[in-house]
Length: 242
Image (cartoon, rainbow, N blue to C red; front, side):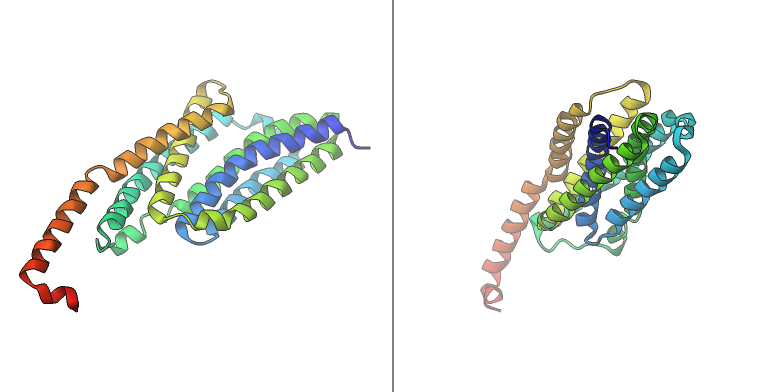
């Protein structure tokens, strides 16, 4: 018999934690223009949730402090790399013909590792709650967790085409902001508990910071480029007719 309270609690924790993982996965997937980051996140989730289901309460002995701290450091590293990549993409967008190097195209190779890490960390936090619910209703907990996962997956696939339409420069700003947000959040969570509500103002703050960093000085460069092109056209009026 299903215990409604346990069922809803399991559904709720899966919605909460997996929505955070899904937000990063969708952004990373749209940025890299393939589904590999999304799949990496799913693999990270199952890597934790399957053993958690089989092992039960033994998961409580794992050192979550070190997991969160390691995750925070890695996300900080990838976040600052994406900040630099976002600035270059903004420069390309402003100047149109600013060349992209092959090295820059490969700069986010660690993005799948980040996606896996996000999925695993969020799944670990969900697993701690699910394990605590097992003694009160194992079947209700499992069914609730499955329902929560299905809702998140369906929502992610519905929203994913919309996210893919966003310009690459803005997507990189968004992804960098997300990574830096979770990095700071998990640094804080390593030493004290913090309400997930604070993710929203932290993300907004990082988005403004990364965006301003990305466009800094580009308007002046665009004006200089336009001025140079106008001078060239005046010197060689036939160029504009080619």
